Length: 411
Image 1 (cartoon, rainbow, N blue to C red):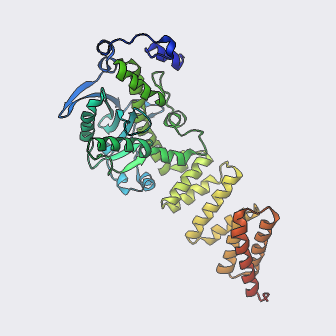
Image 2: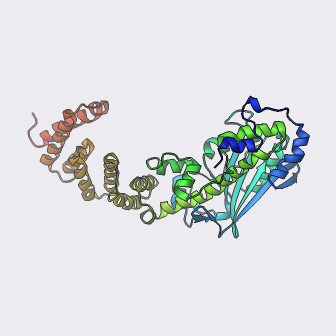
Image 3: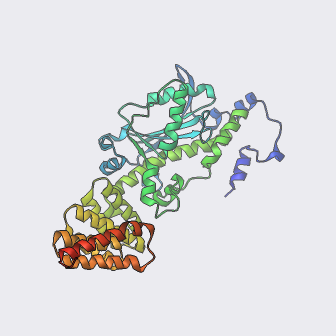
């Protein structure tokens, strides 16, 4: 496969000062290699001037990677994670998948030169891209974005909270307008991807998630995102749009892959026992379910995870979380069995929980004192951390004194 350097040279991108030649007049370049010739689309007139629009339609029976593009059958758990119950009620066609390519990382002058939008519709998935042929067309591009959005929509992005939405809001503000995206229910897939796969995958970049989870391999047409701002700035100077073909492909793949990733995540959240085979992923789903109010489901997932391969540290954390869930639901017998396992591994918190159980639930003060003293010995036997010195040791000493008094041994 040709290197990125060779591909860029073939597209007319100059790498290094040694190959610079006198630049052709912009008018000549635009006629030969304008965006209209390189990336077929249409010029859309608006009340604010013209905007350039490119559309692609993916039929419902055409695979994207290993899977067909489908909207999730259930969104309740995804909506709970996002903290917005509206997401579970909004129909598929009202979800807008959004991705932008910008002229730089950030700054007052940073503009979105390419906005990709995707929607499910009858028969498939449509991706619409708005391109900024020149800065004067920004207001027209914003007008088309306004028309594409309704107050009933929901938004799906990948790092949109930190990048795409602030970028667009800043550009609307520069034109004296308010972004239509601000009040929409929003799922940022980057954040849930980090939560689910931080222990399993070395990278949670969208391209890596595509390859690792969705079976998607991008063609040689793709270009790295960090290169796109420079290619657009070159286009502004030369009018030669050939290198930007890869930018359109990159943006379109991001939009379509977000739709595939949403369905992938939502399915795993709804049926983890059927679809998840890796312990760290299962444990992450269990934690997410526990944190979003699905306690019974989290218990089932955690119990299933215990039969999977996990590092000792992760298994210990899992036992602690599962026991806490049992305790909150009043199932102290099940919690006790897990605390006993953790205590056998030398976990101080487990000794404390067992001591609490025997002191307050069964009033077996001798056993409560026994586990309290054992916990003190565990702390003192090793080099104590600052937390153990400040938290555990004083607490255990007080508990031991109280229990001795209850047993009639205190003076």
